[in-house]
Image 1 (tube, helix red, strand yellow):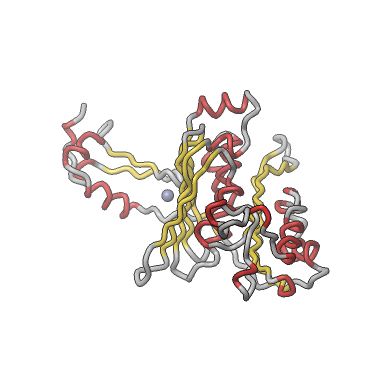
Image 2 (image 1 turned 60 degrees about the vertical axis):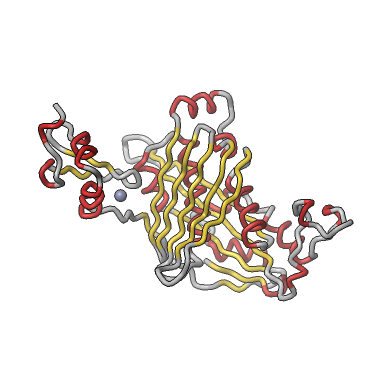
Length: 317
Ligand SMILES: [Zn+2]
C-alpha cells in the first residue's frame, strides 16, 4: 500500500504478507534464521517490485561468505513472487549455537544485486551494493543512497505466529511486513544525507556537518519508532499503521495490491532447459532410468524418460 505525507515531501509503501510468505517459507522448511532472512528479502523485493510497470520484473540476489551463501527473490509484476536460499546447514547450526543468527551474521560479506527488467523495450538495470556484515535493511539504505541518491529508510520484520491447534497441538504460520519511507523534495538540494561517504561531500566540508533537512529528520525519527510487531500484526491494518505514524502531518493512502506466491516453472520450461544441455550432460543426469528435476523455488518435481529429452538411457548404470 503506497502512501504520501505531502507536508514533509515523504512517500512510502507498506508491505504485509500473510499466506504468500507462509507458503514460500513453509514449502522450503529452511532452518528458522534462514527462513527469517529470506522472508525479509521477499518483503524488500515486493516493496520495490510493486512500483514497477505491469510486465516488469525485479530480482534480488545476494552472494556472500556467511552461512547463507545465496538468496534469490524473483518478483514478477504485478503480483507474483518466488524465492529460495542456499546455505550451509552445519554453519547455520553453529551460528545459532553461538547466538549469532541475526541477518548480518547469516549473510557475512559479499554483495547484493538488484536487477530490474522493465520489459523488452527497456534496458535491464542492475544495482550492486556491498554486504559487510550488516543485514538487509542496511543494504537497502546503502542501495538507495548509492544507486538512486534518495534518502530512504526501510524496516523489515518476519516472525512465526503461533496458532492454537485443533487437537494435534499448536501450529506455526509465517508472517512478514515492512515499511519504506523516502524523502522526495522538489528542490533536490534538500535531499542530502548526513552519512554520505566523505568522498561525496563538497570540498572542505566535513560530511557530518551537513545538516539533514528537518522534514527528513522528522520522517526518519517516526519510522525508527516502528516496532516489528506493528509490521506483522494481522490485527493492525496498513492504513492504521501509517495513520498512527503520520496523523499529525496528514497522510494520504493509495489503493494497495495483493501479492501471491507463485512460481513460473513448468514442465515445458524444464524440458526446453534439458534439451539445451549437451548429450553428454543429459546422459549423466539419468538416474534409475529417468531424469528428475526439482525446482529450487517451489520444490515442484518434474520427471522425464531419457528419450523424451534425448538422453541415452544406457549411459549411466
Ligand atoms: Zn517452480
